[in-house]
Length: 363
Image 1 (cartoon, rainbow, N blue to C red):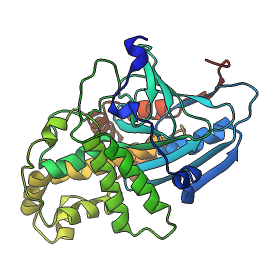
Image 2 (image 1 turned 30 degrees about the horizontal axis):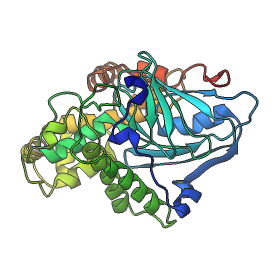
Image 3 (image 1 turned 90 degrees about the vertical axis):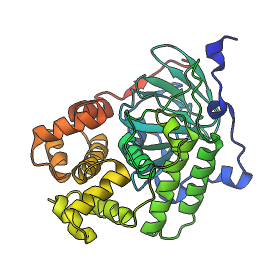
Image 4 (image 1 turned 60 degrees about the horizontal axis):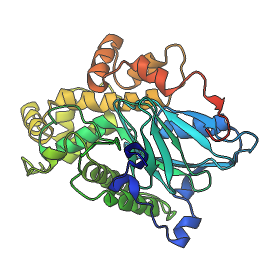
């Protein structure tokens, strides 16, 4: 057996032990979107707004699918569990770029980096590559949970703790052979957290906004601690500041009003402080100016809307305007600076023109 045939690490080696009761009830059962679905395009379109751009291929010809999708968003974090049924499918993903997405297969799942042909089997958390296309074969019966958000949201959350922005774009390390990247906490913290979040969500009661924020932050924390990334070393250092008592109020107000024609004066007025004090808080808490804070929230929401959109004339213009941008050129410049690609590139690779292809049996 070659090295690439045994790409194993703590985050890909362990197959989760499911309690009998939990294995009988899929994650997020209270948020079912489709069940018993046989059309591959329908399953694709139900999953993609909550995950990342991808293509689906039937794995075995002649065996109808029996798909089910459970999904919802918790703050800026999306959770989607999908089971394709039938003979299964092949999932092809392009590089995720400025998005973060990880798969938590409920049963062992084969994966491959398509350009290098390096491959392995994931049984825990598998981070989709930021710069390499990947291929996966989820178990057709037990399925897979996908957790997705933007690296911008993760960066802002990290800056909340550190008191400063990371020195370079946040990128997560995958399961490539030869990688010796280590996380601060055991990878099991990620699985333990998403299972806890799913249990809370599935209890059937109305979720208070404060509880939703707590669940979102629990997922963001587990991702940053349990998966290796370019800012792991910074997390190992003591935080540089004590959280300001107005920080949460400021951020929550910006998230609630980002799509309105607001500016720095409006944010300061909502917090009941002057512009100078707002500037000090933003710099101390997040390492940004108030303008950069507002811009980041607007761009993250615009990217989420583009990823969920169908290509149509004027769609990017409408999304930019709904995010508070009246100048499309400025929107494009800011967008590329934050995510490393243009809005059009995001739209193109998140909604491929052709999705339905059938692979030969066994490939």
